[in-house]
Image (cartoon, rainbow, N blue to C red; front, side, top):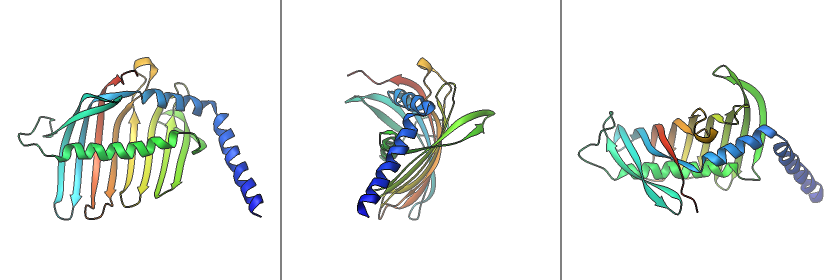
Length: 224
């Protein structure tokens, strides 16, 4: 019986892998995604609406500017601003902490684009008047559950929209929706606007956040 179950599991994984390999649109979308990840925004503007029992509701504005590189990874200097993105006279240490949390969640999301993750091709959908290819990626295990739905342009292989749902045990539950830019430098499409909700599950630091973020002025990462 165990041998039969192992054989069935192997066949299921093989079929899923073969379906991915033979889908020309997904192969192009994946190449486009990886190429765009070699670029980073010079400026990130984040509006954060936070709710915590001990502090009540509060809206913060954070502007992050590319300040340098460390092992090819972007480093940002973040400041608290008013609603017009002008620096406040008093700065708080929490600005960088928000970006670190978002970066950590983004790295978890990016792990689904590696080999071995189950990918499903769904029925095409119309978005903004154009028929788009739709894919679903998912991973469930090791204390995390991640699901990503992608709408991709069949003409450019650009991602148009990406919805992400995450659960990380004792860390956070998160829902994000990201809209990508039109093809720009070298035909690449970048993350333009993102909005979402985070329910922080860290013991003694629980809270809820609504986030809106804009990425601007993309530049390539330095070469090796």
